[in-house]
Image (tube, helix red, strand yellow):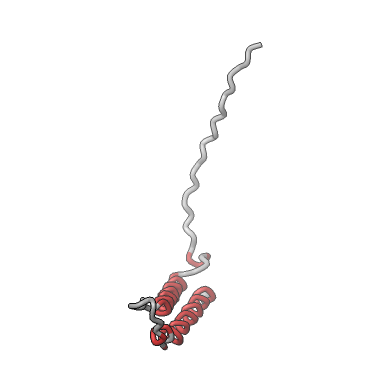
Length: 96
């Protein structure tokens, strides 16, 4: 009994659909929303940068003035919360 070789099926050619241009009215966010999102990200990055602070010159000495500085304790957390508020505003803002 002879077996016949198995023929591989070739897939049918797929027709590429033309790119659809989405009207600006149907988009979830517009240019202004993205602008506010970038502003919020910059504020967040600045807050985290200030929160990180610097390196101690001597790791064996605890310098409480660097750790508990007003920039790390007050300003940086305010900037982080403000950045999050700007991000929420950017997401919720409706286009005109």
